[in-house]
Amino acid sequence: MSPSPEHDRSRPEAAPLAPTRDGRPVSDRGDTVCVIGAGASGLTTVKNLREHGFGVDCYERETGVGGAWNWRHDRSPVYASTHLISSRPFTQFPDFPMPDSWPDYPHHSQLLSYFERYADHFDLRQHIWFGTEVVRVEPVEGERWDVTTRSTGGYGPERTSRYAAVVVANGHNWSPKLPRYEGLAEFRGEVMHASSYQDPAQLRGKRVLVVGAGNTGCDIAVEAAQQASHCWHSTRRGYWYAPKYVLGRPADQVNDTLLALRVPLRVRQWLYHWTLRLTVGDLTRFGLPAPDHRVYETHPIANSQLVYYVGHGEIAPVPDVARFHDRTVELTDGRRIDPELVVFATGYLPRFEFLDPKLLGDEGAEGRPRLWLNAFVPGHPTLAVVGLVQPDSGIFPLSHWQAVLFARLLRARLTRPERAAAFARRVTAGAGERYSGAVKDSSRHWFEVGHADYLRALERALHELEASRK
Image 1: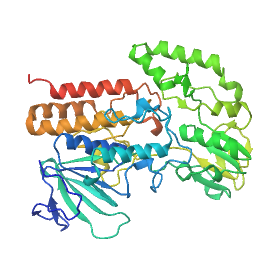
Image 2 (image 1 turned 180 degrees about the vertical axis):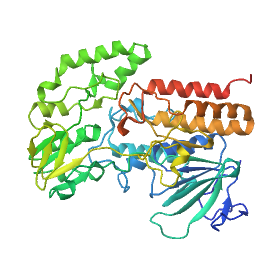
Image 3 (image 1 turned 135 degrees about the vertical axis):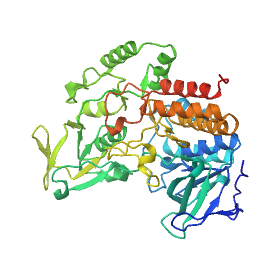
Image 4 (image 1 turned 30 degrees about the vertical axis):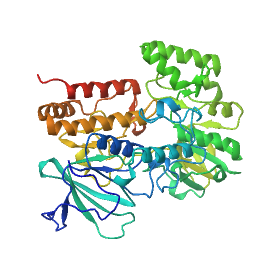
């Protein structure tokens, strides 16, 4: 293994390799692994690679850890009231628990402090190059990778280093997915994507239209109900709205108990419907559209307040937008409304601008990667993506075990090459597998996984990788 990098940026490097085809010098980092991003997924990847004996260079375009949860970062999607939608025990890393004194659903500022303490506890900062963005990642002979970096913002010269492996952990909730509507360019009202939303003051006293029924869209609609002069909430289809608490416990903890007891899906669906009938009843009576799928076939929306404000008349549910006019918005049912502010809570698309899209098997123009376990790349055993999942519970444990599996794969390549070769064949055969009952194929559902099914799949992969020789 290569020696781990020192915190001093002037650390010595191996003799330069032959320059690239365009004449750039290349420095050899030996068996060191490159990790892109120092958010939750990047931090756990650095930690697990180090524990498995690998040198690591982590490049972070911002000046601190935390990724999307660091509200100081330009690309952070968090807003003032952002809290976890999965409960604390199901969100924390398995080897670094959150404080017992914290609430069931911690605030984003607490999450940032958690990542900062995680980085300090495992002494990760010395392996991170802050203020450094990756501009190119290119495969070279021997399944190695040339990684070109520069100071964030494009200042200073570019630098290329050769690595034994690369882990992409740059997140997938920072590149806004913007809808296209007829007449939008001529609309005279204010238009923004939810990625620019930070504080309820942006809504205060305005007539607000929120487009999109994901967790963020519902959160903003709830805040508009309290701050705006009027709030319309536009959705294309019906969704299931899950309360954050059931039977006095966080809903994901109750659901996980049912999963642990191996309660069949149909029985869990019946229990969910029975619970809704006892609490809020038929949501269509509020003007919300009926869902066109059964519960758990996509992830429910975790929001206890949306139905409350709809029931109090503070949120007016409306159908999808048909087109924009200069001062009004026409809906698909023919009605026209006159919002002053339109907030598109229409989600995000994955972006790996430093990679040739073909490397991840992107399907079509939208950039959908084709991976196994949402992490492993067919034909490229030394390239992995960590954190590209949207589970029905916390994501951090899943990122942790993804990183463990990749670290053990890299170790197997050195000590048990036949096992690593068998794993590579499994990656090719299984690319594109789904780990949830999702029935929708929109970008919102691309990376949905049921956490129990997904963790079992990771466990099977670990056992297969470490199985005795046949």
